[in-house]
Image (tube, rainbow, N blue to C red; front, side, top):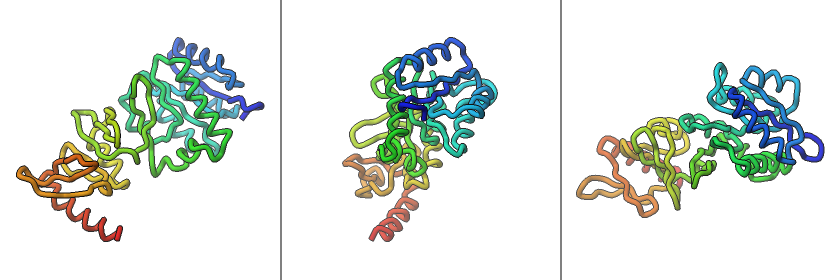
Length: 253
């Protein structure tokens, strides 16, 4: 980190107007002590070869090596910089939340969102015990998912998801007090989250196994109970679910 706690930041975007606007907003914030810019991933890597950087504000869709691929490269650095994705799209959210980014900002960029991103980056860098640091350490066990809430992108911990409902090419993530629609298929989440205890109970439902409080037969077939919500269990998933519940009960007892 640079002197007086100011941050060294690299902004990367292949569109000149977007890069100029992002650079203007970053320079206007007093927490930014030094700002580098790059028009693509190759130029960004040249900057990072010659300069220490605390955070990279990074577009996703770029020619050549895109932002997601660059973020994976940066994650292998001995001291990886914080990553803030700045994008007009959400169609690669399933990849983004696996990377444990510091923030996910949607274009057009607003000054208050840049300020919030810098606050998260600075807090994590200045305070080793800050929750943001713990979140980054634990991201492999509990990755975050970028979701839209009142026009703002927030990072939702996977651990807060109770069950997932398929809605076409999208998935609705249900938490204890809200739901969020994300552009990722239920099949993709079922594959990615299997090791985290999520099980498929129906072609339209994925649930956190440990949160099932009841499995019972109704006139229309089996259902499970989660947070007093009844969710259907398809015939083809019933036997596997029963076996999983029995094994889970034995392991918890």
